[in-house]
Image (cartoon, rainbow, N blue to C red):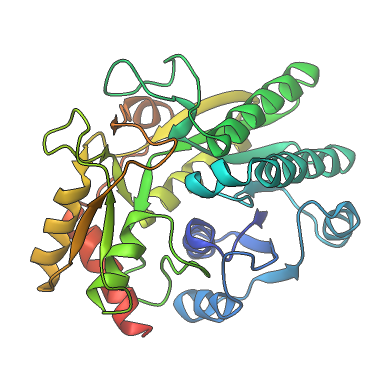
Length: 332
């Protein structure tokens, strides 16, 4: 089977490509390196000893996407490509709506015209907004608190309407919680091109002295220590969820939604403490104002993914912290 992976050199995309290759799939990647680097392609090959087919460009480029589908016999698509920073989306909402919606619509139009109707979509737990109850189940009410989350929710609606219009589609919508960690080889991990927006790359930049201090956005939430609580999941566990989702869309039609998380919530300060402990390094931090669009607590009930996809996260918080630091130290 040949899988097209949009955004395949990004953080989650690259790890998923490794899992696909190691499980016998052929992989075609399209990426414009807006938040990744070209050497990731070499590292994927180093880990797997297998080649990928690569196209450099934007998923919004319909001519390019048609070229890919004309030249490659694509069987299914995993769609990662999109902007993903909550804070940036609040400042630049139109950029997020333009890019995230346009890329998905263009992709689906091209898939449909080439009769490729098996899709795994990279959604987010942000579609649950500020949940009234925890842990979060897939049937909870949906709402958003920031433009990034709204683009994900809008795309979910587009995909639902697409399936209603054509029941030949098979779509798995994966609602991620908070991926951290890196591949155990230390070759690939989270390495944003600009100042990081996510917690873990910020922590490691402070640990290595590249940044002076970690900003903790708020300590007045109604949580165990006042800092935000999230469900952190190892990126390799998350990537393996995509293999299960590919198996699912290949074996049945329909659209369904799956939480990919561990079911455990950790606060920002708990992550900092675990990171310092397992790696033997000090992480300086300061408390700052809350970040626009953030919520107090968010963690999953992952039982539906276990039931329907036969998937569950296996790696713990110490492994996540250790692997994240190993990646940075190896690539300094």
